[in-house]
Length: 499
Image 1 (cartoon, rainbow, N blue to C red):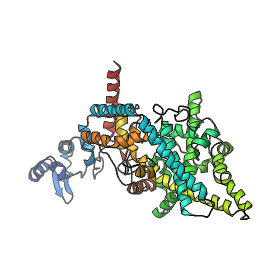
Image 2: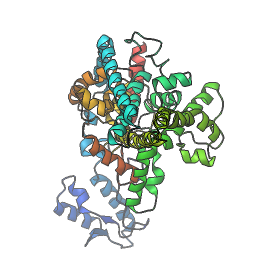
Image 3: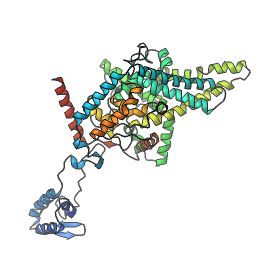
Image 4: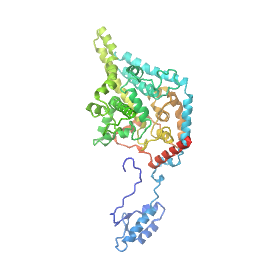
């Protein structure tokens, strides 16, 4: 069965099209509680004879025509009727009983309540997390020139990680648009965008903030686990999954990817999505022969196999400023201090080494916390798009996302607040504190409606994600008939709402 197909398996007859020696298994009839004795009698009556594998129709030329008709009739009579319920797996038996309208109403009402309750507490909590992140930066930068050491590496790594996954992530989603008093900075329309200075002051990383906003906030969130999801782990790793090499080689490739993925994959691909969005906005066609869903990596940029931007543009606009300023200009005070005290370039070199080691560590940390959010053999994929904040949309955010350990600021800080992935995808424009408050309530709603809510250790999820990447396991496809039914119900609910 090909990926995306959910038709039931029907055993092919062990015969040629002329129906000579058609095998009819007695187990087919016993599924409908027909006794073996009665089955044998009917088969003999229809000119079938016992064989070691079941019953074969007699090849008597005078009875061949009527036996052909009767054997086909008997098989159809004995096979259970093919219904949507018959193709469901055991852990999907909740789907026929699921009340999409009631689930939608509960999730929508909770989201409105959470949004209404946001205020000064959320702003104070944001400031607290910003102070933690800045403290990591202070420790890292003040010690990185002394010697190559793990304290500097971990502190610098945590600063880079938290500035992206917590501060920039939730601000760029609009999580503080309505509750933060400083509208000139802490809104999605101002934070880190518009100039190199704003990028440097708010969120300085390999990704261009405007590009990440398009790729993540729009494309990923509103195409979750669909073909058009730019962060679909299974889809993006088709080459690796099908690569004809020993499995340990695939794991080594994933190991390299873990340490480099932000600049090797995420930065060039988010910039591609920005370019695509600009083409669509201007009404210009996509370059001929280009699949917009295909990921762009550093390999395509360097080799020139990229129809959206040149290597010079990418390095001068996107990754070049970060590479030069973060790794070589920022540690320059250590160059001056070292030469002033007669230590030469030692302090400067120590600082650069610590920065590069921190870069490797923050890539690994980010991979574990980010890439694992929607991958695993228990995560669903979907064929068609759905309307934002419809019943299907809410259901998909739960079925294609996973939460990790949670509940305290320290635990959540180490997870980059990405441990509330289900809640974040249900309502992308809420604050970090709102997600912390909402998780128990979302679990209760899912339990009430029988919807699977997955929460587990992030390292267990890491193993499941890597297995998807190397092709050791596959993600699940949501039953096609129910996917269509729910989309049709969405349309009916929307139509009724607009009347």
